[in-house]
Length: 309
Image (cartoon, rainbow, N blue to C red; front, side, top):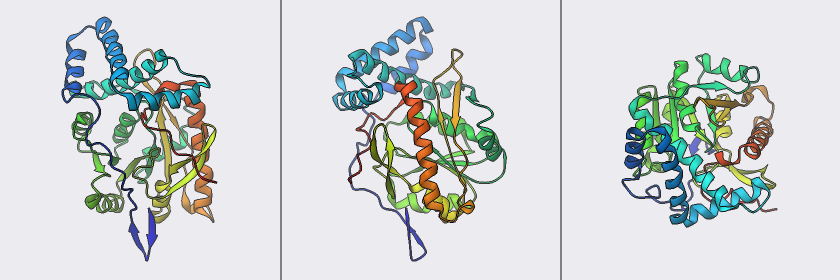
């Protein structure tokens, strides 16, 4: 995002993305059916076997997984590593599909004391910009912000077979709505309207395809490009920014949440310079988390591009 002559404008890339998620059109419904009728002792191995099959038939996603795992594991990944990566994603998808049956995992702060500023902001009536990444159960965390009695609009890319977002929309309606970033003719108006109505907005800040303002930050051993739009929106509309992302499920199936410090543009003479420091700190925590839990990174696309000198 950028401001020109007092107006907000969006810079969308022209890169085309597929209109559907990979896989057969009946794939999601088959997963839901298997999860519903099979006992856990059978359903979980079947899900792993299906994930391993997906590795074989999705060469682009397999290559992206291998590229990422090579860096985060600091070694050449074995086929079992890639299978495990796909399986972790399948488990997160199942959690969203279970919403259709009214099954919601519990969430809790991984570090209660460190998350006090996040919790205080969430419990206040102040609208905010919530950043996250394609990691673990972050979609569910975004939806569960409605538990704090606040309305939230989640920015997402609309795909023709994303029934998981349909399930989330039904499960958390009317507090949660989606803003479809690839519908450029409506997105800017809807985003501005949501912010001006004091609705909190959730943005995923790792993929550059639809980013407006792109800047470089240190991540996984390189200076890489990331969308920086959330901070420009914060400065323009005087909204706080805070990040949250999911850790791995605990043995009971509940989800730990890792949170950041709260960034407020009004607290700084140079808000964007302070924002760069804040985002770099967030990415450093994220990288440490991924090196400990490498299979939670759910971007099965090439890693963020390296920045040119």
